[in-house]
Length: 70
Image 1 (spheres, rainbow, N blue to C red):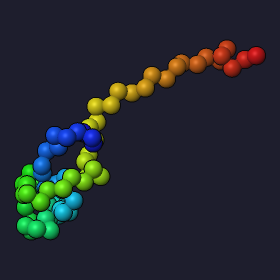
Image 2 (image 1 turned 90 degrees about the vertical axis):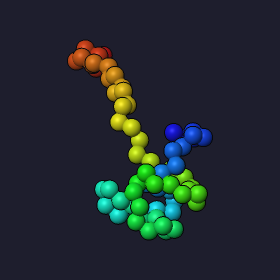
Image 3 (image 1 turned 120 degrees about the vertical axis):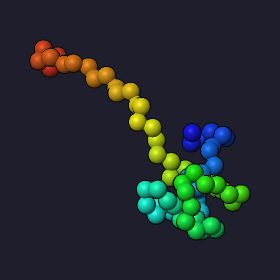
Image 4 (image 1 turned 90 degrees about the horizontal axis):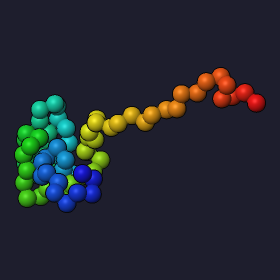
């Protein structure tokens, strides 16, 4: 989503907003609004995006004591 051209226009991802509490954001242009609100001054801020948690773990090889002997 970082380099995706189809970014959802939401105030919680905008450079002109800051988080007020868990359900509202403060917009520089419109004041207190909902996080899914959007206006024509939307400008994407990549640092506000929260990445998804569906990362697959890396498999670690299982070593034995014999692997470390000469």
